Each structure stands twice: as C-alpha cells, then as structure tokens.
Image 1 (cartoon, rainbow, N blue to C red):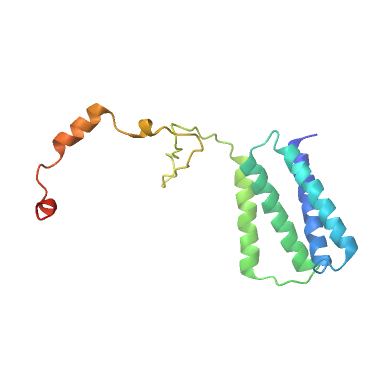
Image 2: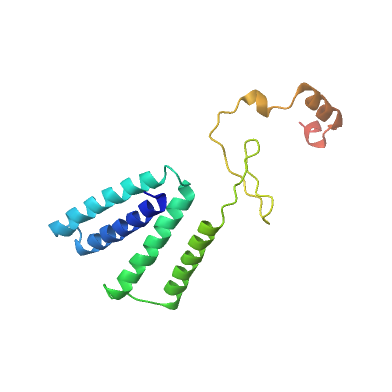
Length: 161
C-alpha cells in the first residue's frame, strides 16, 4: 500500500478520534471515549507505516494540516462552532502550505555541523546532535599565534587595576 494512502487513512482516523473526543463530553460517555482511543491508536500506527518511506516533516505537515482543516470544517458544520474570516483565512493558509510541501521536493544538503539555506533572505542554522570534540572547536596553534600578534599590548581598562 502507498505511503500516501496510509497518511490519508491516518487523517480520517484522527478526525474521527478528535470528533469522538468532543462527543465523549470529557470522557463521561463510554462509546465515544473508547472509539477515540482506538482511532488514535490506529492513526498513529498508520503514520508509523507512512514514515518508513516519507520524510517526517512532510508527513506531519500533511497529517496535521489536513486534519486541522477537516476538524475545523466539522466544528463549523456539525458542532455549530463560529466561522470568521480570520478562521477561514488561516485554514486557506494551511492548505497553501500543504500544497507547497507536497509540490516542492528540493533536498537541502548539510555542510559541516550546520545547515545554511543560501537561497533565502534569512540564514537558518540547525543544531546537530553529533558529538563535538572540544579540540575541534578551539583554534589551531598557528591561528592563536596570529590572533595574539594582532592584540593590543596595553589595555586602558586593565592599567587601573
């Protein structure tokens, strides 16, 4: 089965589970409460299967984005929740973001210990979980000697001590 089918089924189960959460009235109704736990369990199992072949960020964005859209629509239509221009505009922005993630598959290469997105106006750095040796972070002896020769011999702040 395709990973995208797993995601779509996970979205349906998540929407059913979240609707059951509302219907359970704070776990005071047994059937919706049990259905909620069963649907969430199946939903996360399908997401795990989808993650075997797809990227985590894309899977989570599509799952949470489409789930949010469907839950908002169910809330407005079925539970008679408020519908404002801001809410509808935010839902449209989520749809646009999901479409962009689905269409754009540019890989980003990691150089060294940080990732730099050169094409954007902002420089974005991501931390690494790789162990780093302190020796790798310190300047070499030659670099330290070069820096020392450029330092001022006297410092006015230190002369008064």
